[in-house]
Amino acid sequence: MEKPYRLLYPLRTFLVTSGVYPEHFDVMTADWVVVLSGEPFMVGVSVSPRRYTHRLLKKHGEFVVAVPTLSMLRGVWLAGTESGPSKVPRLGFKLRRGEVVKAPLVEDAVANLECRVVDSRVYGDHEFFAGEVVKEHYAPEAYPGMEPSLSAGFLLHVAGGRFTTVSSVIHGAD
Image 1 (tube, rainbow, N blue to C red):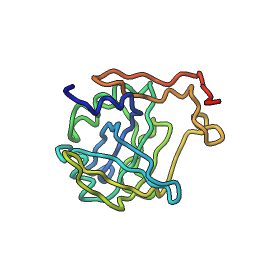
Image 2 (cartoon, one colour):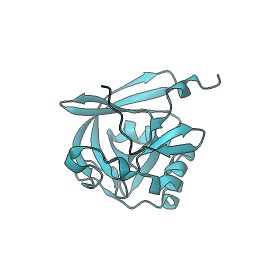
Image 3 (cartoon, rainbow, N blue to C red):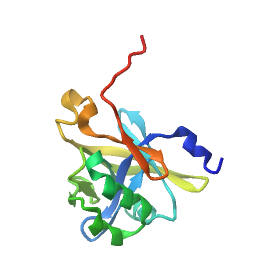
């Protein structure tokens, strides 16, 4: 198999922003995002050193994880296939500076987590950045009672430029 990591797909798809908005920043699509801790709330993201986002993370030590929806798919795909700030105007996302961090929030997303890097480690061809969530923003209709609404259109990357969304069918383990 050419890319054995795809055995773990489909994965949730996120956007990661970094840098200082509006001066110099980037928006990158990332499937490799994980919850590290509930208390304090921490998340991690794996980023290739070849990405412009990586340079901004190293320089500024802050990032935002945004939760896109199916309606944002064209921009999500573009943010994941091109590197560097020149793509940002074509993404079609409304951005604004974070309230705690300087990286941009993606206003079109149903959630944004503002994070400060607390650690980073190189693993193979990627660097893993652990971030403490210092502020969260979310659309109440996408998370009624802080539970995800399956009709919100959360994206899952199947691989190779193919995406799906979650269904409204819920299966119990009992």
